[in-house]
Image 1 (cartoon, rainbow, N blue to C red):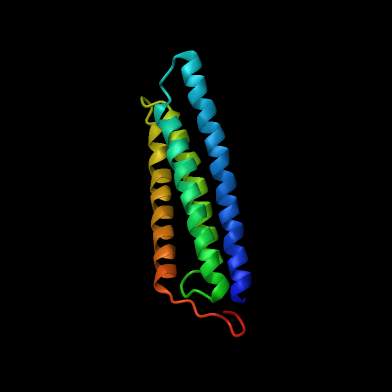
Image 2 (spheres, one colour):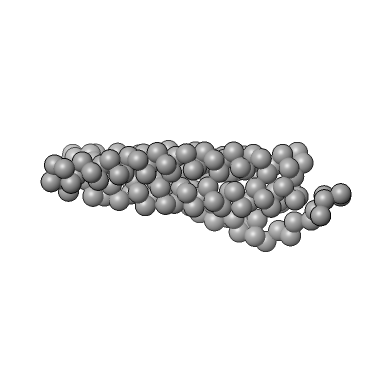
Length: 148
């Protein structure tokens, strides 16, 4: 795989993150409007995590992968592969809905505990992203012959 092909694969992942961020933005805003309309603030955790994690963090992941794509266009980045980025995408996108679902399940039956492993998945996705970004930062891209 040449650098340009790798860059496009990372851009594809970044675009997916941007689309998911827009989805969570719309969902979080609709939930917030519904909470205002009905005067019910029982879903503050759900609302804030849709906006903070679903929109803010996922958009930051997208921006990070877009930056990595630019570096990958110049040369291959050791230790940063589209497969690892794809894995990070799916861990994050399975973790957040599970964490959100756990936040609205009844506490008395202990069903709310389902959010814990999903929250840990979300943390693992953040750590994996930090590893990928730090590896991309450490690498010194060398242009391919004929590119300046």
